[in-house]
Image 1: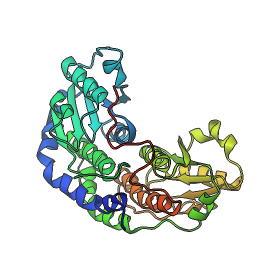
Image 2: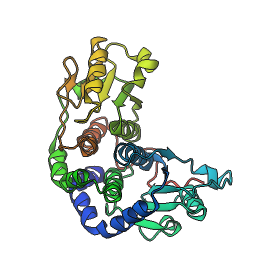
Image 3: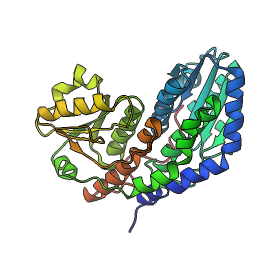
Image 4: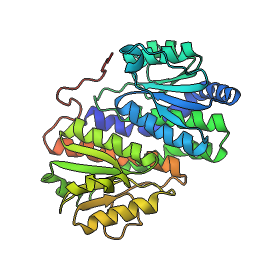
Length: 341
C-alpha cells in the first residue's frame, strides 16, 4: 500500500504547476510592492522544514536581488516581547498551517513596524495570512504525511516566483515555468549505486551543500531524522573541513548536494577529498572522480537546479524508512502541526 508520503512526493509536479497558475496575481502584486518600496534587506520567519525553505530563499535573494537576508527568531516577539525596528525591511513568514503562535506573533510585529510583510502558507484562511500585508497561497493541497515534502517545494517555489516578480529576472522566471516538467522527471529517479547498502550499518551521516544546496542538505538531514531515526547533520561543504571532518572515518556515509552552478566544482572536490579518506561519499554531480554519482535532474538554471535535487532524495528516504521497518507517515513523537510559543 502506498504511503501518504510517497503519494505526496508524486504530487509535487502537479502542485508546482497549480501554484504557478493559481497564485500568480498575488505574487505579482507582492513583487510590485517590493519594487516600489525597495527594502534595504529582507528577513525570514519560519521553523522546521519551512525554515529550510527560508534558507533556500535567502540564498536566492542574495544571488539575484543582491539584498542581504536575515533569519529572525520567532521567540523574539512571542516570548521576549521585543519590538524590532523593521520599517526599512521586507519579511517573509513561512508556515504550512499558518497557525504557529510564535510565527504569527513575529509576523504581526513586522507588520506593525512597517515592514512589507509577506506570508507563504498552505492555509490561506489562517492567522498568519491575516497578520501579513501580502498572503500567498502556496497551493500545495492537503498534506497528510507528518514529513513535509510538496509543501516544502512549493514554499521555495513561491519564494522564487516572488523574487522573479520583484527583480524582473526573465531567466529565473523562464526556469520556474519549466519546473513542473523537470519535477516530473525527478519524481521518477531512483537513488541506488550502493548508497542503501552503505547506510545499513551507519548510525550517523553528513549531508553537504553550498549556496542554495546547503538548504537542501538541511532539509534532507531533517527527513532522515524524522522518517528513519537516523542521525544526520547538514554542513556547508566548506565548513565540514573546519572540525566535523574529524568524525569522517572509513565507510562514514556522506551525501553531497551539488547544483549546476558556480559552487559545483568546489562541492565535487570536497566530496572527492572525503572519498580519499575512504568515506562512503555520493554526490549529485558528474564532476566527481572518486565519490559515487547519484541521479539528479539538470534544469538549466543553478537556482532551480538546486530545488529539483530534493525530489529524488524524498523518494529515497521514504523507501529507506519503509525498508527499515518505520512508518514514514507517522514518525514517533511527532505531529503534523507544531504550535510553539
